[in-house]
Length: 214
Ligand SMILES: Nc1ncnc2c1ncn2[C@@H]1O[C@H](COP(=O)(O)OP(=O)(O)O)[C@@H](O)[C@H]1O
Ligand SMILES: [Mg+2]
Image 1 (tube, rainbow, N blue to C red):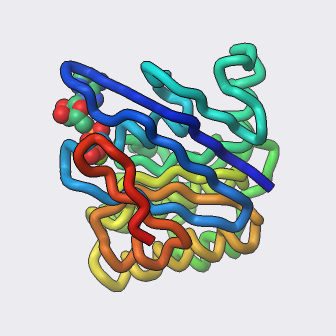
Image 2: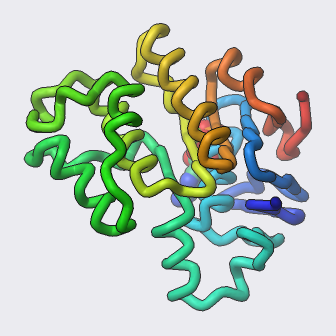
């Protein structure tokens, strides 16, 4: 099934970042986007995740043009079907891990997934305050928070940035297992060559174009 389709996207801020970007994501598929810092990867991801409207082109989610959706319809899709794992999406620091996960659980009506927490190695942290955890643990909790709502598409921006190699490998496996088991899709922006190459499709954003390299 087609989850996401982008058609001839162009976007500029002060100067043009990219034009004529098209891609398609199907169920159980993962797409990686690589490219130099400043090439526009996060901007493209924001457009695909409907946080930003492109200057030109269309984004289709589950077969429907996002620009034709009502605000309410789009809001519901964002809440129930899209999961954003971005570094700037911080946890609520003064609260416990469990409270942070409960927010996602309440909003989506899905239970906190203990198996998921186990696979992330953070099942024993529920009672702890976020501030008591290491940076790597906090990042894994923020991944757990997103996956708790069982999104159909996950958008991931530089997830292994603050993680050591071992944790990075574990996190990588979590995402791929999630995509397979939940029949979801993933669009990943990464600097990590290995993580990118493990995706089904790899694009490079270069010279304002999105070029398929795998
Ligand atoms: N909201 C914005 N307003 C103006 N310029 C922006 C904005 N977001 C990003 N940029 C600029 O667009 C370029 C691409 O940024 P970004 O998409 O974050 O690249 P990447 O993720 O590949 O490093 C950068 O030069 C950045 O400064
Ligand atoms: Mg970026």
